[in-house]
Image (cartoon, rainbow, N blue to C red):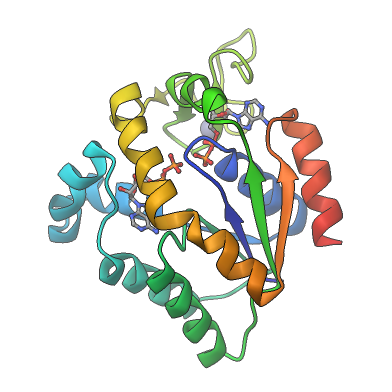
Length: 213
Ligand code: ADP
Ligand code: ADP
Ligand code: ZN
């Protein structure tokens, strides 16, 4: 089963994608993670997109479609979870064509609904394990008392340069202008399902499990 997790920055896409990877053996394809990796490894593409990402704007369709195209060549395990992709109508069309060319289908699009007011708190409290990428939050998902990652035991935690209020405003605007039209696009295609992203992490996981069947 191939699915998209759709929602604004901070909706909980990465958090839920990681659970689906653990519970169902699915493969998470996060274009945000791929772009950050390209930056850390200092590739030309990484250098090119750094300033765009820090400001909170979208990088070009060509770049992200290229990244996804490469990954679709690999093993699909228990299915792909598209996390943070597609973000534009052009990306959505490209994904449909790429899947079709692999004889694959897009089975569900899960829209994670959250209030904008909740997103500032979500984003400004976010940090991740520098070793394994596990997602934490200062208030809603803190580290255990020993300060070690629950997944890998590392104490090396990171915060993203773009997880500040100013960049979030630009990212939210990009979401409403460029990404939210995808809700109507997938509704019309008949595979949109919505879940309440404001519920607890466990409750959201439960709603997603129901939608996926
Ligand atoms: P968040 O988890 O906050 O939604 P991501 O990690 O998915 O953010 O993305 C971080 C940044 O990477 C975005 O603000 C954008 O600059 C870039 N990016 C990620 N995915 C895409 C995409 N599909 N199209 C264009 N830009 C993207
Ligand atoms: P996205 O990938 O959509 O940008 P994340 O999964 O990174 O979102 O979540 C953003 C922040 O909110 C993280 O700090 C995460 O720990 C926290 N978070 C995710 N889901 C929930 C939830 N259901 N309730 C409370 N906090 C959450
Ligand atoms: Zn870890």
